[in-house]
Image (cartoon, rainbow, N blue to C red):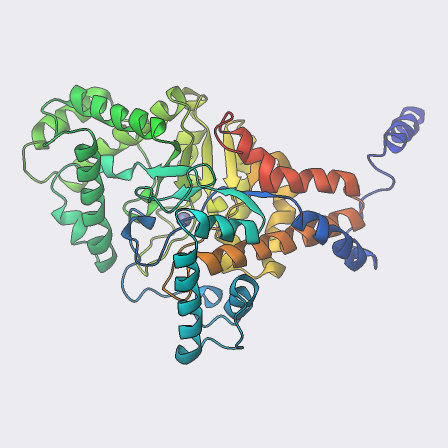
Length: 442
Ligand SMILES: [Zn+2]
């Protein structure tokens, strides 16, 4: 009893807990929110996951949205919040985005693009939303993005698809869009390395993969990204090198592998890439949420399938960033961050949910592993009017307001002090992600 009192006294004087945590915020929560928000808005952000670029640029992603995909309510182009985005970024004078009015927006953007030479246009967008730098997760980098402010995260999926892909392409209309784009991406890596056809031996194929990774790193790539969940289940077996080598020899020159054979081969290549990510200090980003396209299979691409990879001590040297934090399984997903080398990115959650719901996600994460979560927008040029610019704005605004609200509740509920809340805000919006890249980003 006496010891307990003494411990509590020590904790109290160190300012950690003035009182026991309580289950409801007090009447001060709104005031705390109002006090925190302007301070959080002043923190220059590092956007850990985004696809900046113009709507007519095919390199903003290594895949494309399938035709006629269903979109969640907030990500449709009739979301009235996009009017607020256009007003804030471009001084848009109208209160709707009717075809006639959106022409004004299109003209204004084109005018600015003409006025601002080189990389100035997208730099100015980052300035307007107080983002210091933003990952550009793109197939290739364009000359209109400044690599100092837009560090490149390249795609690594295409190495999984070197054989004849008729079966995969024909599986459903979405795969019919995705798989040919993977074939195209692999050809581009081959061109980059001056390789005109697949190497004849498996050892040389692995060497070719490593060479692409090394060259991409030299060309400014800070991480490799997988969107493999769009193309196949994310359960990865653990085949031997001999098994993979045998399959490569059998299919490199032609023939169609069975589904099982192809997956076995891919499982080995995926693990090889993960291991190379550790050796080359290239963190591995993995899409872990539900995805666009009506055929996206959430149960087969459940983030928990990846436990067999990320909890494997052979990959302890590889940093994993679970892009989109497993949404809508973010509650389970935060426990993956118990692994020292695993981080969760919150992008897309802040766009597909409204801040009231996203606040609860952030709060639960902040209460569990606050030093393992990072901010991202998943901005994307959906079309000429709803561009990367507007989705950057909506993502940043939503994240900052939800963060301020989550922290205000935690302060009011006696979980943390206000000073600690601001430390957590800096960590989430900037510091935690930047530390993963060893001085290559800021
Ligand atoms: Zn994305």
